[in-house]
Image (cartoon, rainbow, N blue to C red; front, side, top):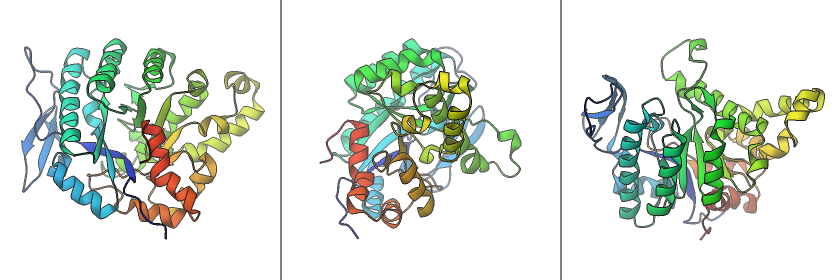
Length: 338
């Protein structure tokens, strides 16, 4: 077993502020979120009058997070908002107001964390001018490594041409972009409890988002853009061989994709949050050991509790392990591995 460096980085961990602000304006939008007391150290996130999720104080309590990080062998945790707070379905004005508050809360946690936290902010992707302004604030004023965005923007794929100005700005700023599943497609095809959205629908939507980045040639247009996909890239690992064969078979696909889908996929980053060593080994073989990073989905109940052990079980080569545990995340975040 390799020694575990203190700079092991978890790129996929979420924040919910202890309190959410009152709306500054007239009548608050119906979908303006709020926090309600729950049992013990928990609080409930209320959206449109309904409890979306009940969360523990580890969502906002830095010292408790750090204690858990020490148990997991994680030295640096990258904080991003709970995806449901990204608010791309709200009007741009209220969404911008809410996201600026959340970004400020993350910035405060980063400062109080004494070097144990880094930040990924949120931007109102439904208004690209506002999104780019907040992107500049996140990177230039708050010192964040980049931002988190949803796997779709109200049903529109991230590879759609309309989002080109945002990715151009992110590349120019050197901002990392972390794509997380959000309000996924296909929920009408699932049979069972609502938690299947996280278990089954999230990976589907992330896979489609990553595929849209490939089929739109996003990284060919923006070769310095650092963009990562949650949940191991979701279903992309199974879709990619079909896409590769389709690229070789259909002239229209070959004309659209200016480079092999597999080569393009190996330009993207992915977290290693797949809960299974054989699956992780497959993704390392498919995407390369330079493109996968630790991700846990902490602090929600459905998260990876032994991220370092999972990678050690999947990857035998010590140098490759170090890349997954430390170096790849440092490259993604634009930081030194030390």
